[in-house]
Structures are given as structure tokens and as C-alpha cells.
Amino acid sequence: MNLKKLCLSICLASTPFIVHAQSANIDELIAAAKKEGVVNSVGMPDTWANWKDTWADLKTLYGLSHQDTDMSSAQEIAKFAAEKDNATADIGDVGQSFGPIAVDKGVTQAYKTTTWDEIPAWAKDEEGHWVVAYTGAISFMVNKNLVQDPPKTWKDLLNGKYKVTLGNVGVAAQANNAVLAAAVALGGNEKDVTPALNLFAELAKQKRLSLSDPSLANLEKGEVEVGVLWDFNALNYRDTIDPNRFTIIVPQDGSIMAGYATIINKYAKNPNAAKLAREYILSDAGQINLAKGYARPIRDKVVLPADVQAKLLPAEDYKNVQPIKDQASWDETSKKLPELMQEHVLIYQ
Picture 1 (tube, one colour):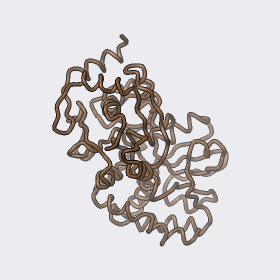
Picture 2 (cartoon, rainbow, N blue to C red):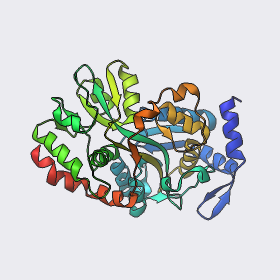
Picture 3 (cartoon, rainbow, N blue to C red):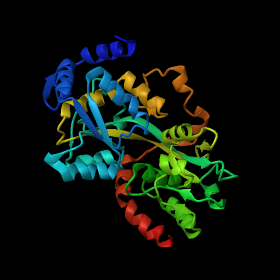
């Protein structure tokens, strides 16, 4: 047995877990998950936060086959709600602000991992319906072949000749948080994103705003000049395409950090496999896997190998990055973003 498997086995086998009001042990969870033999995810593709290593580990360690359908946070929740007992997905990964929305929709089931106490209160649902596994910060991904003067701040975006690709606001958590990051940097907050709306409206007036997805494919094809992405996505895409073709910049006038949370489908066909997947994701090995994908693990106690730590941007780049301070207000504002974008920005498209 290799060290990784040994460490995980000791961790998972020695600690009880809770599923609603029932108690069992990790051995029973593993056995039940193995019997199901498969875990189907949504919004957890190989290219995002190095999910591929986690799926490979679950296959090697527990024999779980895996399939993912990539989609946005809002689409994941809608899929859970629409399919109900005909569920084709067991687990999803959504932007933190979408966690409470999923709970409100009644499409989740609770599961607290053995590492639950090490997760900050702000990063988890009290009952275990969602839990943040990793965080990221909003950054600029600049194609150096197309942009000669890379923006260092949000205000710099107004002075360029390049197109800014924001993504689908109101649907994608990455795009939603980009709006908040711009708002915070320009004097707004979780309740008031007017400064960001004004910024993007001006870009729209200049015909320099794109709401298409700053995806790996679009970046590779050269269709994105300046993309607004989570740092872990930007770093991953840069190294996947060509490390010399892009530069990654955390806006110096401010940005925000936020988390992504797993939600387990209330109607999952493979609920035990989904719970075991969450358990592994929040284990030391699972957290290191995410860091290999440039994401920052939620558990501070996890010690990252030196080569993994070196993959991340320098700490000084994040001096003006702040966490979401008023999650409740941001949850409410997030729901209004489609309407706000339509009223203040899209009218100029």
C-alpha cells in the first residue's frame, strides 16, 4: 500500500461520521460506496482545480467510476431540481453563494466529513448541506500576444483597446464574483455593486465587453484578450496552453476571494459514493490535489509539498484581496445580478 493510500485509510477508518441522525463508520461508508461503484458529478471537470487527480484516486482506492457534465452553478441546481428521482448526477461543485440557494430549493442532502471541525464556520452549512473545499481570487488572464499593455487594476481596463471577457453573469459563479471583486475595488460592497456595473457599462459602450465564457478552449483559440477568472483557473489554463503566452495578474486595486462548495444531490442514485467523494476531497490527499490545480485548500492544517506551493502566485500579490464580508447580503445581491446587468450594462451591448 502506498503512503497516500495508507494515510487516507488511517484517516477515514479511524473517525466516525454522521449522516443525518444515523451513525456509522467510514468502513461502512466505503463498503456502501464500492457497492454503488460509480459517482457522477456536475461542474467538476478534469481541467478545473485538478479534479482529475481526485477522480483517479477514487477509482484506484475504491473502484469508483466517474463521469462529469460541466455546467455552471445555477445549471447544476436546476438539473438537480428538474430530474428529481430520475437523477443523473450525484454531486456538484458550486460557487459558495449558490450553496444556500441549493438548500432553499430543497435539492441537497447533508453529510459532515470527519474533518468537519477544521473547516471555518463561514465555509460550511451548519447541517452539512454544503461545504467549501477550496478558495480562489478573481484575477486577470492576459494574452500577451494580443495585449501590449496588461491592466494592473480594474480602472486600467477602461484605458485599453482590448476586449474584456467577463463570462455569463447571473449564471456562472466565477462571473458573479468578478462583479463583486470590481465593485469592492472601486468602492462598492456586497450590497452595492453599482461601481462595477458602471465599469462594465462603459466597456459595453466601447464595444469592449464580452459575456462569453473565458474557457480553456476559447483562450486556446485566441478569442480572449483579457479574461476575468479565478486565479486557479487562470494559472491552470496558462500552463495547459503555453506558460509563455499568458500573464496572470491579481488586480492591485482590490479583488475578492471566495470558495467553491460541494453539494450532494438529494435524489442521488449513488449517495454513498457522493459522500465518500466529499470525504476524500476534504482529506489531506484531496486538499493537496486541489492545490495541484492552483486552488487554495480550505483546511489550513494541510501541509502542501514544496513543489505544489511553488505553483501558486506569490503571497504579496494578494495584499489587496479580501474575503466576502457580508455573505447574506451577497447572497441576495447575487440573485438580482441578471436583472441589474440587463438594466445597467446589456442595454449598451
